[in-house]
Image (tube, rainbow, N blue to C red; front, top):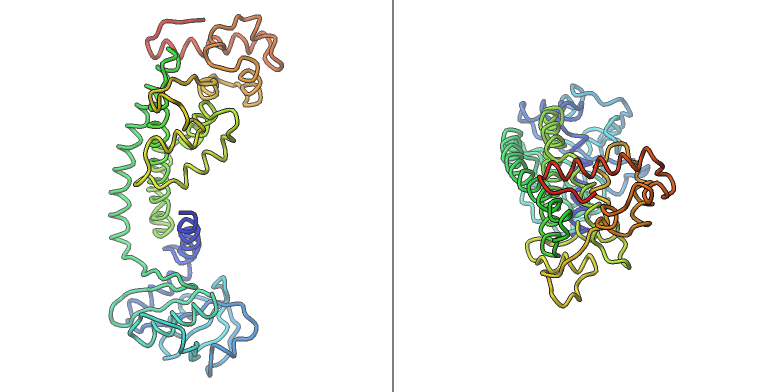
Length: 356
């Protein structure tokens, strides 16, 4: 799981340099429209004698028109690793022929072997199929048609909207149960699973945004509006319910690495340190109050932490008198009143009887 995410992040970094709106993408589009095909290698290595042959050095600034004109020649083009300068043109890539390759075309086979041999980014543009294929190390990625990418992104965005709506409802139900002290491990695990689903779908859409470049700006605004502070809410839920000997941030990170297709709600409970509960997912758990206090306006995180450490649970915070709250370092009379008013307001919004 972690290796896949790392490879995805690496691919996103590459695509960001080739996305619509960049000079490199403009040059690639010129080549695609002309159907000349091309082979591009991106490397800062000083000695390339073991991988290229022939051609001529240039060391000039890369421009879309220059890239297009150089691609008219049969040989490969070598650019700097950042793609800003053209180092060589009309060279022949001569990677080790013993390196395995599944490609059939000479251009793509040379690209794959060169990428595996050097670890550098190599791009092969098909002359007949209108396909741009990226190679880097063992990574291979055929770039998708932007119309198809946009269609997939919009479909994912619609799904995210549904997931986010279900999550909002689940968080509201969890809040109501917290004030009534009726939360079970099942309730917590369900919320955390839905939070993780929203975050993973958001990451998938963010990947589409990278590939779309300037065409994905509206998509990004819509995604951020739907996701909001979901990640922060997830961490606060973990802080509320993780066992005393569990590091909340570490547990939240492990949740990101969980295979949601194969895991059960009990696996999430174990991440929180509650795997040994005899009642299983039906066991009652009491929140510490981090998430509830975070919704009190202008209450710093440091003060929230001190209040939670002082009282230990949301129920004890709800039962605390103004004088008891006032005695917590950093609270004082003004914040004591703000805490009580903020908790009362949350109960009113849920139509629950006040306990303050």
